[in-house]
Image 1: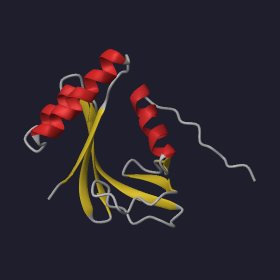
Image 2: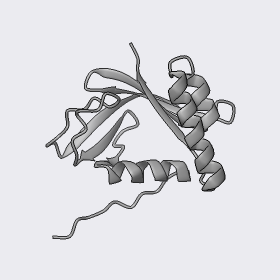
Image 3: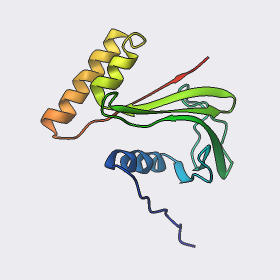
Image 4: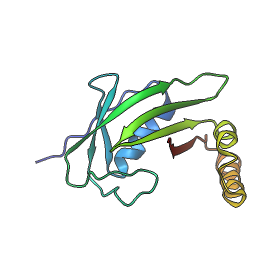
Length: 140
């Protein structure tokens, strides 16, 4: 039987790239049955990830509670969502590289920030790619 692939519609090219990339690594967005939840199909083992503590291997679907959404705006230049992942409250943010890196600056070791800035510069100048930074952290 042929595998059925979802066709995504997104409000921005960034969102389309993120859901397509997530699907490529085994975390496929299915739908948002309610504004307060999202459903995913998990086809790879993500349980070893410190940034994304899931125990979903072997589950066909995973529902994630969406607690709050901070929409993109031109002042913050980023969008954030707060979710409950298996009892862990997590903040996920995507946005312009300078905005996101400034927001995580105090927590990001200098060597990692310099490496990220170098890669972003390479992507933008030498390759001509548009860049987007994604960050997450646990909220206590």
